[in-house]
Image (tube, rainbow, N blue to C red; front, top):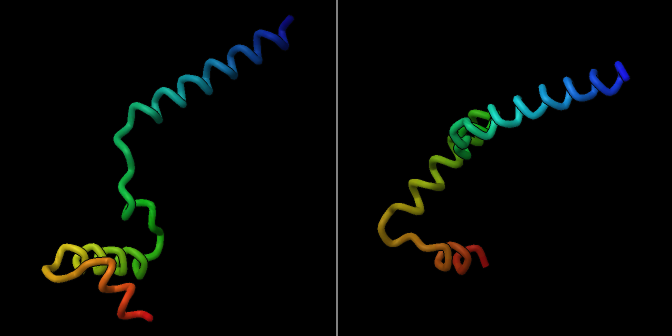
Length: 64
């Protein structure tokens, strides 16, 4: 019976951790990137997409 109580305590602790994690703010894409190079590349790509005259279709046609 002690084993069952220990498992129940462990499950409750895990549940508490999940509840705390899901209450947190979502993590943005840049925050998930470990490499500074990748963060810079993402920023440059986002800037390029916001710039006038840029469209994904044009980018694809240029690469062919």
